[in-house]
Length: 308
Image (cartoon, rainbow, N blue to C red; front, top):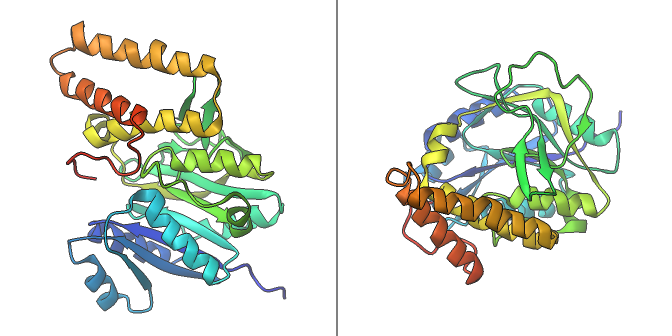
């Protein structure tokens, strides 16, 4: 029998001990035998490292002294995967629960074609187990915007059973071929969080690899879209990093004009003089700070005192 490709599962933790332990428990039931789990801790202050080491001594824990964000934290894990000579790395959010067949199906989809660089599963809401959060992602290159395919749809088999090509895979669960990382490079740490996996998928695709969604691979994400909409640091990073994404991918002037004037300026005016101006004043101010920081080249972690 041929040797199975070795996969390294990277679980990034930042003050999320309870979720991380549940995620690790679900990973222990994977039916793919050739894998190792590593927890990369981003400077947690909740005792995560000591508890994980005590309760799960077989799992490798890498400690970062500070919060390096999604990009920086996962890059630490990717470097470990390279050092371990892993064939694949699965980047996995800690607030997720995986189906036992997830890793096997993702690896099989990748092994079917050497030009597949990244694959991702169907991701459902944890609180609504049959409602899709992501079945891959799509990029509108005319407007410079992105969206989750299948968002809020009930799964009735609409995406079939075979892997299908998509523009990007969300970093919530992303299996990457390590040879693709060696070719295209690591995640861009200027993003810190949000849009970094989308830019990475574009960069890896431009290096000659395919990005695929594997419908039969399944997992569940403890995400609240409503909470994200109201989050100031999500608003900050999504506003600033969309512009960084446009810059990194070489978007046309038409796309820049649409983003800055047809969308951002319109929103700012609406939140300044429209009927929502009072309740959206804080969000407006966050957008202004994000735009200022992008054009001042203040990238990476937000240089303001928000959580995150």
